[in-house]
Amino acid sequence: MARMSVADRREALVGAALAVIERDGVHAATTRAIVAEAGMSLASFHYAYTSRDELLEAVVRRVVDGYAAAEADLELDGPVQLEALAHAAISHYVELLRADPAREQGMIELSLYSIRTPELRTIATAQYGAYHAFAESVLRRIAEHCEVTYRVETALLARMVIAMTDGLTLDYLVTRDEAALERLTELVVASVLQQVER
Amino acid sequence: MARMSVADRREALVGAALAVIERDGVHAATTRAIVAEAGMSLASFHYAYTSRDELLEAVVRRVVDGYAAAEADLELDGPVQLEALAHAAISHYVELLRADPAREQGMIELSLYSIRTPELRTIATAQYGAYHAFAESVLRRIAEHCEVTYRVETALLARMVIAMTDGLTLDYLVTRDEAALERLTELVVASVLQQVER
DNA sequence: GTCTATAGCCGGATAGAC
DNA sequence: GTCTATCCGGCTATAGAC
Image (cartoon, rainbow over all chains, first blue to last red; front, side, top):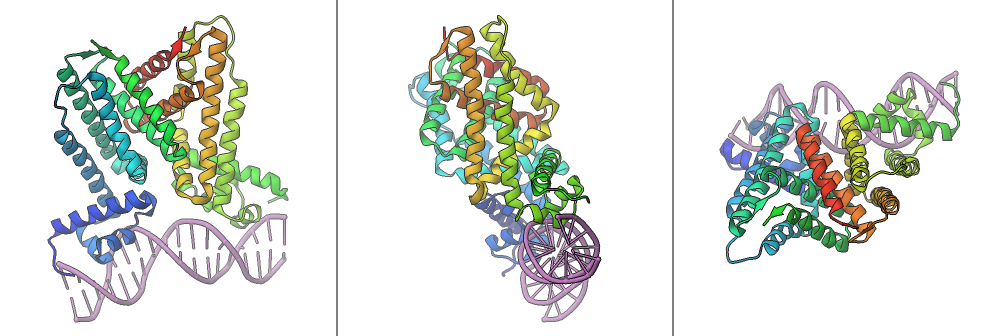
């Protein structure tokens, strides 16, 4: 294998780990599976990271950064109705879920693994902090765009949205019931809209 | 160890497995950890079950049966208001969550593990089927008691309740934020009440 | 710096004594 | 029937050749 800077090697390993986690789950993301995915040797792994947990910490950081970037990219332009906007935002996630359920399962597994591992606990908290911040930012932009306010603090409503989408995700992962997913999505949207003060 | 019938041994192993899963997670529930918890030898395990997955299947079955029994035990008597009843039902679960978060984490891990394991997939589906049936039964009894109906099918609303409590659970497991848990609970109750047709 | 080889441990499952 | 002892594979991490 050609020489790579440690930074590049870490980058490649994080990407490979994410790929394995998304495809086969946290349980399957062994150092061996990760280096195989990255096309490098086992020793190279330990040259870039001292331990598997250190790599997983970097993986969670990348996921968190990814959400921050997604927030910046989100477009909420044009003269759209409040209901349509709320529906579009939730549906956008639900489509991601339907397109790649294993990925979402991997993300939940990653959170659960993190909170079982003392050194990773704070990282897991940061992960959810990023989820909440993302949802809150979207809610805030919707409120501004549609000139409405919420009956509860935006941060709390954001938290509810994350909780509801997580619950939706678990339901779909287990049952794979498309019809229920669609109808549950509508109920989640209705629950959010209920908290809008026009 | 004294002689035990295979049935008794299985019973003991399922209980021990559940204890380990609730305390340390599915990942830690190795055959060795389970037999240590049950106070028996490793060989005795394989005398009662042919494989670890076979035992885990039995564990999920016990969890499912436990929910069915809990439903039968639930009391919804007395002239209570609809709002108080809905709040009490949700709060009852939230108190279980606060009292033993590790247990709820273990149950979610068990579901995720099951859906990653082809032979256990149907069991996971049954587990959620039992959750839904439990919630639906409670909703039905509340509706009957308070003489109201729901704007959507009771089965769908039950599904929403399970999804929301799952999401609530993940949020609390990660953040351990008591204040947020309380306020999220209120939002979940409000979301359910929104679907009541008086 | 990168590799192969291996140490050392823990996992599920089994053999064979009693 | 129940045990101890063991096989064997996979894991993380490291040693040492190049």
